[in-house]
Length: 339
Ligand code: PEP
Ligand code: MN
Image (tube, rainbow, N blue to C red; front, side, top):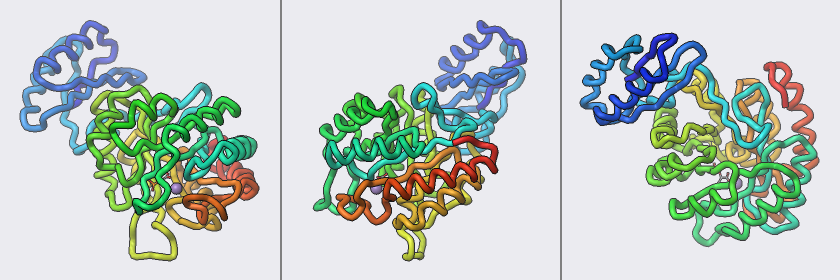
């Protein structure tokens, strides 16, 4: 249910509403609007009619049901678009496109530092790199783990770029959070509800990737798991879905951008690297995504893709990344955004 407060309702009235929601066994989430506040009351759907009684409390204008199955992620609760601050001066969802770039996996000190400097010089504002890798084969490289996290922290120290890195296992949440500025949930973990709930309790932005077989509604329900635990800093990432097509690794669902914008206030970024699987296809998908209205991109870049331990074929060389970024600035202008 959404409890819409009157324009000018006092803070005491708001607090009283929150308390009453808790007494009734629901969780209140206050969303501060420009002219009025609303309180989302979420919990067991079955007894929610009891929340209608809040309508007679002082300061309450009305109580309306949230029709979508996802509540806090929906535009019914919050019309204004959410901006997720990653670091001072770096926010996803504003009028500046955020480009995250770096290797699929952290491989060595030289590799991550060289890449970090190169992507920064080209205009990226966040460094990506996996220290824990969710690989399809148990025999493939699984990541440098904490050693990799330390190298990412070193690259942040040297370049000032905040880092986004994946947490694969709920037991590693605290460890990854010690180093990461943004915690990434990979496509394979989009419905790992235990992991999502843990990430909902920490004070870090979460980059939630869409699963390869996840519908948009399921994707938003996964975001809801994080939001409902209290963490409001969720960034959605479309990274390609499985179709019958084999010419590309996945099929980039560009229409997910406007569809999500109709359904949610959360920011949306695109991963053209995992979507296509081929570096030659990455730039055009970056331009198309920006044209379709995304808030940012996450792109794999490797100084020597031919010797990359993972995802070499889809990784851009630094010079190609730079050329892509220069052209991207033109597309950004067309949609009224800055790079
Ligand atoms: C990654 O970003 O390196 C990754 C494994 O992506 P995805 O979860 O989208 O496959
Ligand atoms: Mn990868």
